[in-house]
Length: 221
Image 1 (tube, rainbow, N blue to C red):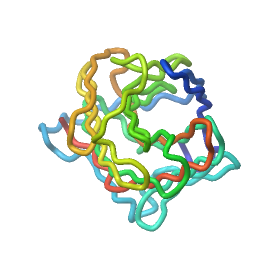
Image 2 (image 1 turned 180 degrees about the horizontal axis):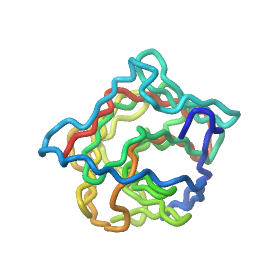
Image 3 (image 1 turned 45 degrees about the vertical axis):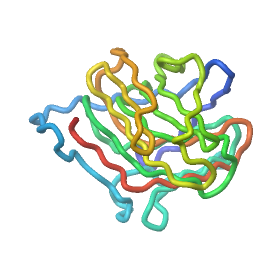
């Protein structure tokens, strides 16, 4: 999202067994034509120490996202709201990693990675700081959890203000989610084939989720 555009938000209603949301559309990212990289090659990384690397720097009544003290911050001030930012890349198969932590606000939150963002559709890999996780897809105005009917708990997820290391593998139709080095979910879906990658944070019923991200990495799987 160019920095001159207004901050984009996702309104989301959380149910016990599903997620349902609507998302503004966005122009698709042009498909990359560069020479394929070898497995394990670094595509790019960002420790957010340089505030000119292209992540969104925006603020509105519902929240803000910006570089902050050598990291990247997302503050969500409204309930039932997501904010997200992308790296302005076009990738197909990719392994993403990031460190995320909570600066403040409720543990009932959403935070994670997104891949294959194109035309407003994307895959998401999220945890909550009260111990839940999920893989899902937003496509055609509808959000669907993949491989599970509701978000599940796992003791490997650090709660409260503790940091979590997240990894999302998007390889062909295989989507795999790791938290703190442990695989928590793996599913297959072929609906989305390429697009942008990025970060997401959001609220459920309580506003004020304040998240920080660092050490974002994209690797050729």
